[in-house]
Image (cartoon, rainbow over all chains, first blue to last red; front, side, top):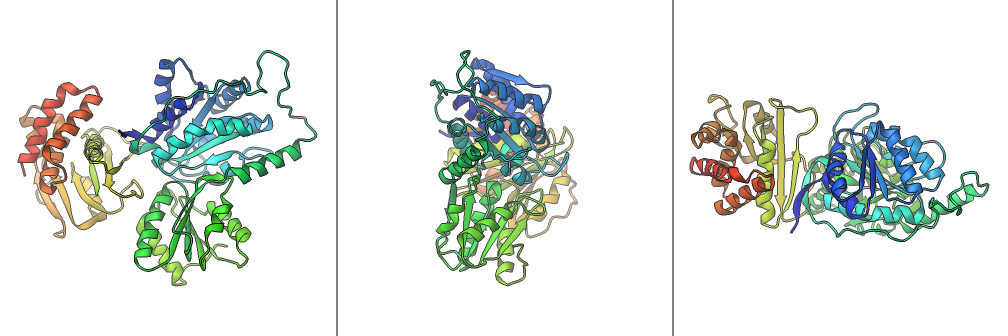
Length: 349
Length: 176
């Protein structure tokens, strides 16, 4: 039977069931319960938990652990995640897998503790120096958080690339009924890790690297796009939203459909690679895309505009509903769409 | 169904939400529980939001409240987010009798702390309020509610208080 679990506790338990052997992190609201839970649970399971001296140290500790093939993760929130960027760039430079969790809070700098999606562009574009991408998955429920967490170590090792779970403050703090999968363990050798022999390892100074990077990201983009569509096929007004705003947007679709408007929703589950393929499912007379996001000035909307340009021959306007430091309410989304239909909103792209 | 439990930190409004979540879960509903979190403290502002339904739940935070359980006076500010005809359960020990409530809402006033003290369980004013709410709305059968109450506290390692909490629940239930 399902039990009520807090998002942050659930993601931690799911990581352990997925085989996480080592965790290093540094506390920050609204993510601290991830570390708190692991600090008690990992010793019980004979695994290693370490509260590092700071965020950057934590990411380098998992860098070292994964160099030896140990399933490892770190977690933080916006400001702490900024501090980890150097280490994430190094992980990517060396083709190391790893699992990162960002329970986002609002704002640049210290920001606030409010739920938001304001780290979208940083996290989907790499975030540190150099040309790299992290695979980023954005769940919209606690059960989905668990289910995705269960897969991410496999995904990270498959591509030798960091994978991030992009959560939100409210998703970390709230509770929902959850069921967990069984414990699993990877027993086979990854083939490239430091094992005491002198076998070939990742080489940074490889003249062929630009080509390899491009090929890898193209392969990930082709194979790993994930999304959920809702009433998209005949839709004229299509919301695009991930995480918690996607839930209120889905309810808005129902409300608008009940009023006779052909609304639909595309919910990216991978925000990198962005699910361009989802837009191919829109076969109706699409009149507008509406990006619904907990940002101040719009971030997801840039990917929506690129997808609209890539997949449609005509120029479809893209509007943005930006709810700042709160989850947009169903009623706000419905009313925004009605203003778009009435020509009272201005498109962003 | 959207229920908000609001009061001072320390009045047990987060636990109230957990108890009612458990009752809804027992019925096989989808449930969300959302706390006010962040820089709150004992004596500060606190609330939890519980939503449950058969279908998919949208946002976990307050949108259109069906029931507001106001354990203190400042909590009545959330009444502005209520549906017409919604219910406000007022803890009359911490809300003045002359506070005006819009007539479009159904109101019950119950001295939660006094009733909890009557059964020697002053910490359980929140549970008295739950008893009153459940009786008034018929949300769950009382036996199911009591079972959920017992389960929550047993899981928290506080099973020895189960009888006392049940007594507090019945004070609220019979007090309406």
